[in-house]
Amino acid sequence: MDERKDAEHFLNLIKKSKRGKFKLYIGMSAGVGKTYRMLQEAHTLLHNGIDIKIGYIETHYRKETHALLEGLPLIPRRQLFYKGKELEELDVQAVINLHPEVVIVDELAHSNIEGSQNAKRWQDVLDILDAGISVISAVNIQHIESLHDEIKDITGVDVKERIPDSVLALADEVVNIDLTAEELINRLKEGKIYAAAKIETALSNFFNADHILQLRELALKEVAAQVQRKVEKEVVQHKGVKKEQFLACISSNDKTAIIVIRKTARLANYYNSKWFVLYVQTPKESVTKIALDKQRHLINNFKLATELGAEIIKVNHTQITKAIIEQCEERKITTVCIGKPHLGLMKIILATNTFNTLLNKLSKEKIDLIILS
Image (cartoon, rainbow, N blue to C red; front, top):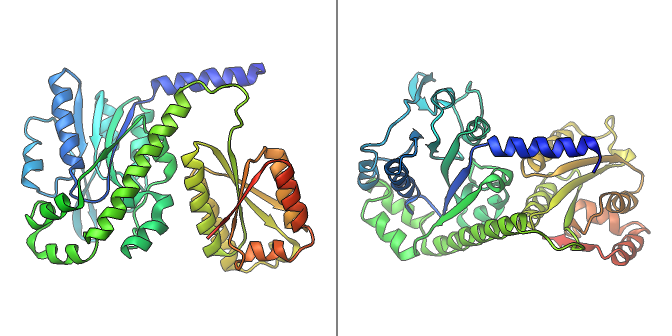
């Protein structure tokens, strides 16, 4: 390690030590008890002499949960007027100024009111952590970015508020709040989650027993994967172990690219691995020739990939397969991920004479090729 890299490494260690700790509660849906558990923990920490404050909590006026606010110090919310209505948001600056040891910030996936310093609450949380304040927060499994398509397939709901997987990966501790489907449905029927007028609609939609079972499985898998990543990160690796590195190859086909990006993100997160997104710009997709809507979709997909933790690689090349091989060699890639055959990029590769070259090269270098459905 040269002097510059050695200094950077030490600086990163200093920054990490000054940064607040991040604890995240994950649940399969609303009503499992995440907020209740956070408030219970707040009372325990307060009883043990920890300076803890409530930055933002959403009890939804659930009687048992709301009662736990008694005795806990609250940081007043920021009052804003938006479209003629008075609304409240987390006051990030007040949290930083008061500088408690720990602050509770609920609803991590929440979108802030237009004109706020940050567009998303998870960005507020990052600012608070960077200020050296520890944060306890909560999120439902359906709000995790890379699970968007799976959640939509299960529930039919297109969840708009999402957090990048990279934020999840920052958590020092991830705790799953688990209930059986029967327990959760009983809580709903008893009016402990939503008002009476919403119960029947909820039972026939998001709180369908089959949906709950699938969401519960996703939540359990996600927390297990987080624990595995923590073990791999903190336990010294044996020398000589090959570190996984994923390369997601995308085209200008918007729908294909999103699938490849999200699924590769899931794989990379599972293996706690570095990953890249490669877009090869061929002459027929040069800036002067590619349609404006395709350019816009590419920019949005690069942004999505970056939020999910990828490094973007954009190269100009006449042959896509050769460009992939070159990047595999340069980046020491272990797994290449690509769209299924009937979609754009794979169609181009199959149509070229160099596809066999790609397969032979990947095989020789012991690089896996995954064709994503």
